[in-house]
Length: 119
Image (cartoon, rainbow, N blue to C red; front, top):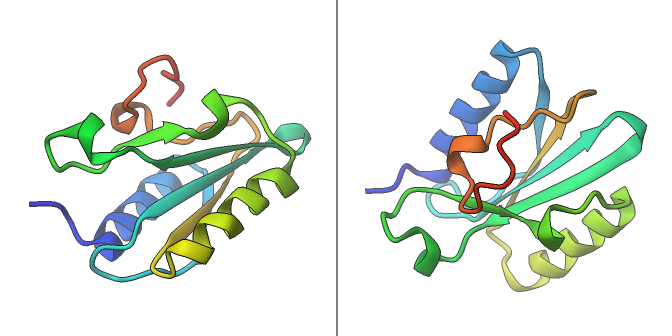
């Protein structure tokens, strides 16, 4: 059974805070089952976006993410545009904004693609 979105978000925000990473809810979605996007802003205004992995890639029901655009660093406006397009189709969408100078996101154990082992 998958954790409700609002519980997962609260736990993730608390974990970020305990590591000195600034993270906030930029868009509140459905408390039970809303998809969660994570927008990471690092030094130099570099932005990465992590989007929910398709269920066929996870299989176990646990929340997992994949880096959007193959993990490329994006202009913040481009990341915002991707989020806006998705929000047109999914009004239950959550967006978490994470800011860390070193680009830490604490998702390494939750990524489907293991090439991004940054914690």
